[in-house]
Length: 283
Ligand SMILES: [Zn+2]
Image (cartoon, rainbow, N blue to C red; front, side, top):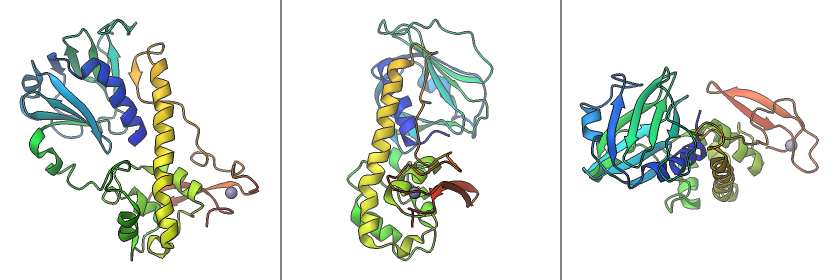
């Protein structure tokens, strides 16, 4: 499932083909994904120029010159593929329509952007740009990890008195937007904190120390994603799912990578999700 770094990578990969370009035509091949598409979606997209693209949490937002913003969520399995030759950089011909190609954007620069989602947990919607932040999907989100609103005092206040495990607190999108299971496991390893620790009982200095660690873990993953963008033209034009090495995620039974630690990585289930951690150096 894509988390913030993967969504950021997809967004950056789409920008050269979509930002500043006009949507000549949008093919909407079914009435819904996770939710119904908005009324007349194809019509509202046709002829519109994309003036800016950005990311909020795990949502890609494309601001149109009509005053509406296209919101895209990749869900569990959504994929974006770019074909065509807008800037002389894509070697891929437009592919034949595949099963699960639900929405296709034909851009005026010759690019074709295809959204494919076999499991259909993804979503698209059209919001008023001016009030987008108050949309029900966005208004519940806490601060962006790289934004000014995410800092020591915010996290200390959010953790204060909370009886839930720190793992759950960091997955709470109202506390911090965009973190998912994989990167929370990695953050807690780097912080030396057990995922089982009660959030409200962690010393303030250790809570504060999570802020730069979260940014560092995400930044490294975004950089790995950026490196993958250089290769995607040689692959199949699909964006966003890059190879990344994790310290604990998916490494059950493997030796701990912390220098001097002789522990091994364990897996436990918390709120139905797997947590990977080293019981020896994460306390
Ligand atoms: Zn360890």
